[in-house]
Amino acid sequence: MPIITLTTDFGLKDPYVGAVKGAIYKELSDVVIIDISHYISPFHIAETAYVIQNAYHSFPDGTIHIIGVDAELTPHNRHVVVYLNNHYFICADNGVLSLIVNKLRPEKMVEINIHDRLGSNFTTLEVFVKTACHIARGGTLELIGKPISELKEIAPILAKKAESEETIYGQVIYIDNYGNAVTNITRELIKAVGKGRSFEIAARSTKFKAIYERYSDIVYANPNKEQRNADGLAVAIYNSSDYLELATYKSNPLTVGSAATLFGLHVDAPVIITFSKL
Image (cartoon, rainbow, N blue to C red; front, side, top):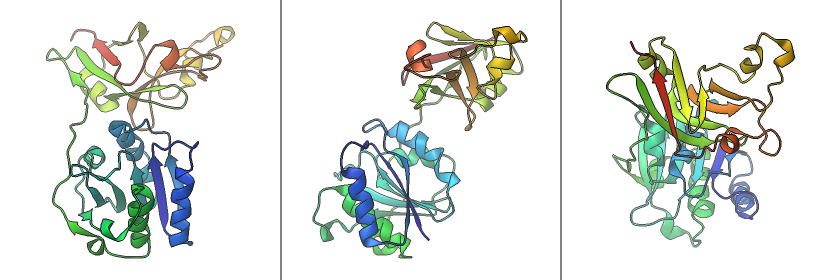
């Protein structure tokens, strides 16, 4: 049974997500539809790429991913299908795929050319749904588009190290539902630059001197059991994608607070790691 995923900035208040799902079922009743997220910040390409990149590989080969973010068809925003790493991605060529592709090479890429057969201006509902259902039925990409050789590129915002190798300069790239702040600093970079040295992470006025593997590690780091009331404590961890994440233990923006509210963090906020001298 084919799987189609949906990632949009539609939210769930309006009828759009339901309309897209209904249109898919109307075309193809024998299909599984999975929501990855409908709470992408409006038109936020980097956030879209982060969410898709960290979700798609959990799905079986052959899964079809509809990305409905900044999807309006314009002369500078064509519609494409890319077959990459045994998955299909249907979206606007707005740079999101250049961030997802990373070091992988797409096996096939086509520019969708079925727009003149459709009457609606709801791109994701019409063009993307028709394309996804065509693929789900076993149709070839060549029947819905012309081959292309390149995608619009957006340079990823990467963390950088100072020439002295005593400092890493990064920034927050994503705030999750718990208010945790994901940075663009990876475990690999910290290990390569740090070489086992002690360090301090600065995020506005909040400082961290250790990075844990799990949120709960902050509780057991304190040997005194009577002082293990850790709800709301600041903690830095490597998340499941090996990015440095700044969080609060058992965070809740309405009670104990979150990294975003307590540390004053937002997307693009600077995060600096300073290492002891070599």
